[in-house]
Length: 453
Image 1 (cartoon, rainbow, N blue to C red):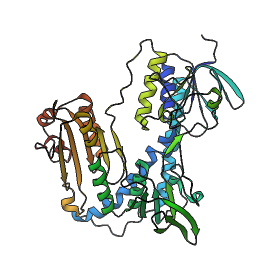
Image 2: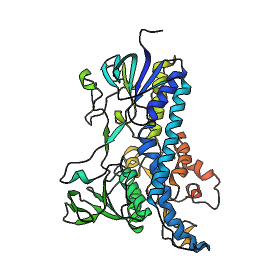
Image 3: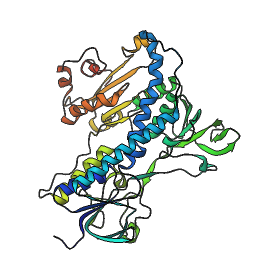
Image 4: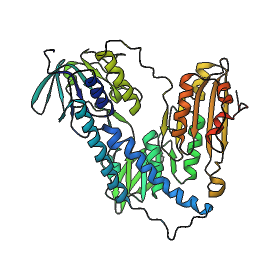
């Protein structure tokens, strides 16, 4: 037994923190976790989970419209109740919070409700109690950031948008990342007159260009009003709503404005500044491959370190951190290549590997295979929605280096394709795979002729 109270003290009980605590405890380490808000962190409470539930709700709008072509006729017009969705979401998240608490308890991890502060390399204080630990792990995640402009006090951020008191019949989203395009689609699907304002020429920077353009066109077809190369100049509260003035001269009157303008490390008040811990240029904690900060006994992982801000990445980092510090065998460095991701806009995006633009730089000669089609479902539904599937192949090795999809359940499809891309399978392997018919996913194994090189 060491002279410390704990072998590991975790600050933050989000996905990464809880996984790290449980996994370390399983090795025999004495572990405590401090959390001042909610168990499960951003993902469970104000991120992935409620967002996906709201996305499911928004899809029902289209399902009702599509049903007529298949012979189903509702006795009356469907009616959406915001309060039912909102309150049922609260109940589900409470259930998940309880599960996280039981997981920690079963693992033998002490849970402390409170905001911990780092006193020095081996001591923390929480609720007027000072505790010592051989290693301290910072896993507090991010916090929404709202830009400065006149009237910004009238916006809601991505933490609060799930619990609006009233449903906004007119809704505006500021931003161009995952959260922005997802909530523009969600509120449009729920029945809002939805607007998206983004300062760039096209949203989802960093994604494949063709995917971005295809998504733009499909979202516009569904009724989302897209305002590119514009920003909010000011917001004024007026009778019946908010008057939003844009930098391009437009004025819009809406009921609510969501600032989906990014998240920053939630480091305020942790006391890390007194240790002069090194930060990156973006304000994240700088760590090495062992997740050590410039003070080796203080570790960090997840969104505070500036890597891919994805729950599965935080989980992988947590397990890797335990291997480094609590297992006897030193592991290889965590591989961040070919991490799949999904954007739950409407239609969904799923992607893994390189974009076409990245592949041209990394590989030189490539082959690009594209399928752009109207899904079989919509031959009867009457919907004009289309689906995009795309494979990118390194010409010299025939290895599939990127796979992208925009369409229904894209995330579910790409999760399977991600295994093949991760394994380094070739286009010949895809071609030799027998498709499942009739499915949209079979297009990934039936695209024979390259669309372009």
